[in-house]
Image (cartoon, rainbow over all chains, first blue to last red; front, side, top):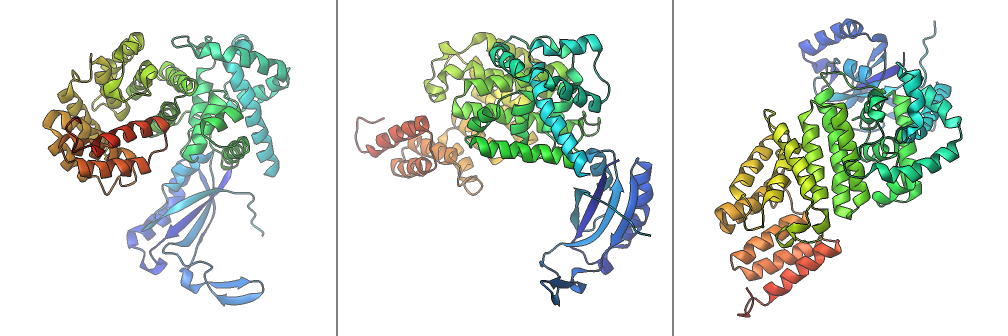
Length: 111
Length: 383
């Protein structure tokens, strides 16, 4: 099955996410599996203000671009096709923002 | 992964040729062998077919395509052979994950089999630009995994609306550029969708709307009030009427059905003066409810002027000025209402504002004529 990354963009900082959103995050993997998808991996990011940028060898305070919505997390999934991936992506709880679904060029987990 | 992408993209290119062939009898082989169940198999078959004497088949297509665009002449029985595949292809080309301009271009290229350079000229871009746009879109279809499938029932209404919007856009582009050929493609697509989705009332509505545009094509260059209605195609109007009557049974009727009904009221009127304005106003009210848009509100105001007078209509138009500041019909409509109220100086200003936003020669000539008349406002001979 094709693999996709669901990029979650949130305007709400992670420590201010409402409890129901956090709870929904805990349940979403099982929900996606029940819908015929498969979650391969997931990462949740701390807020953008904690980022450090390395560019051309120079270290600076991050992030690259200041935006209202920041990348808050990524879920890597397997789905039958884009429609299926979008169906799964709609299950991802977002307090204030949206998700972007990107096909993967590759995905590897090293032991 | 890269290899897979290349493979699928190549299949899509191959599918282009096979889809063109769907318009001629080349697919008779499928009738004998049966329709492949899996889309993958369909694409593979398409790829294999492509290898067969592609050049000769292209010549056959070019020779036969115009025959298939005759009004009423249904494409050669291919509906019996591969309806599901054609429907899948339409939904793939009109997938909401693709930009609108890509949806329109892909539909013309892959579903209608229009040559890339003709698609390019229909949308006033160079062949290279259109080729790049198509390549980008096909690459996204392959890489993102846009399915070759009719959407699930829950998604179908929204997805069908996207398809109908694309076909409607083709009709609008044809109307704007006076292209009979592009209009024929749009009508052909709507007929195909009607054959494949006979229960979808909005498909009937859109087909009726396009038929009415085509029925009145001969007089397209003149303003509605001045058109010679004896030149309108009564057979097409009758066909559209029957479709509208059926589609209006939907509760509530959709936006394409209501637009068709509005066009139908105009088509039924023996003259501009004898138009059933109250009926039109009721239809515009219904349209504004299912499709709240300032452009609809502007068209409603034009009808309102005939029912309740230009002063009431002008009030409605002024309420739209913020939303439609850059829209030439706002200024043209406002100018006309001011002229009818005897406010010639303001009318002149509005005509000039409309002219600044208008490029089409026919419309410019009309506006300039009106402007020159309002310019003679003090002249007792002017009406």
